[in-house]
Length: 34
Image 1 (cartoon, rainbow, N blue to C red):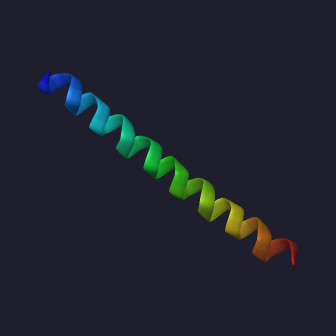
Image 2 (spheres, one colour; image 1 turned 180 degrees about the vertical axis):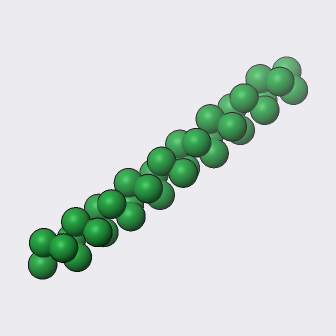
């Protein structure tokens, strides 16, 4: 159970980091295209 919870936590961390990267890229595109 503990291991499964830890895996879920790691997955969430990865998803959040990718989401932040996506937001940064989106912002960059908006800044460059305007």
